[in-house]
Image 1: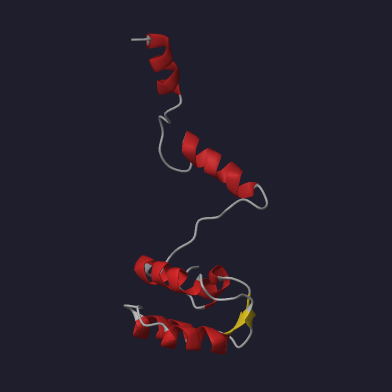
Image 2: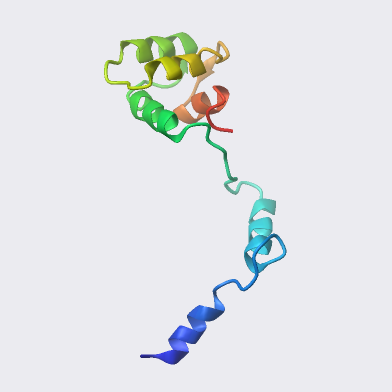
Length: 109
């Protein structure tokens, strides 16, 4: 076994947790860089995943009314009522992708 390899890898493991630890400092640096991905919160992973699977077949950009009609006509949706309820709060506008829809509906924030 190569012990120098193992020692190098151990040094890469953060020794402190929290915002003052190595990982916390790295995350803070990443968040300070414009354009980096930020963490998001998801209301219901199963609902968002199912909605994404259904809406992937929709032609974007799309209006709210077309999204709702597409959902109503789709037969295989398990959480149809929950999804329609969430999407009813959408603003009447054109959406460019599934991400815009889920964020506007408050499913992802």
